[in-house]
Length: 321
Image (cartoon, rainbow, N blue to C red):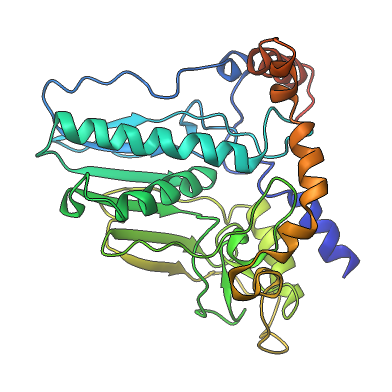
């Protein structure tokens, strides 16, 4: 169990990016949230939100193929997770990035009402795109026939029982809340067409219940760190709605769960009440107050710019935050 907890702590909810190189210092500077876009021809569009350490560069989408009649646009965001050592917490990032995506979709549709819009999200970007899609699913601002969503490695993928690991789902769907990182129930997409794509040994989207199958959870952490979080993404090939679970091709190092028990999130959120979040409120308050960027802003200093420059300096010095 100690090894399991150590692995989970080391994971720190994707604070490494195993599949793609981190952005350089110049790419970590404060950037506009959305790249400029030419809407004069109103071609169909894929709005992309990338994962941790690639949110400002879109490096993970380098192999996304081109398609006639379509263009792609990267929606950039500040991909902080742990506020004590980064500019902001994950919750802050989600709260600020999701409205940007929603507004971009709405503004594009207003300018090009006949064009089709696809949201493509990977990893942390799948969390952002998926949450934005849920908001759009409960609005008629954009007709649902004009919008679809393709997610890879989604931290809020719903629980399913498709492999020997037993019930498994997105990391935030399975684990309990921690300060600055809220565990969320699965989304409600209504009739919106959403494609979830997940590899069996990717703990970000297919975390087994660590209480009933710690061996599977540990193997999924290892899988995440050694290639299982890599996806050859194609928003058109992979557009079919549904939950697409890709079974591992190599032999598995674990078996079935010892029992069917609630997940940590379910245990700490009875009747939808986040008990863990309530009990951790004092610590969450401290974590949020230690949010470096916000703290500097309170003193009238340019917090984001200063913290991003510090992160850039640390990366040039070989220190990964």
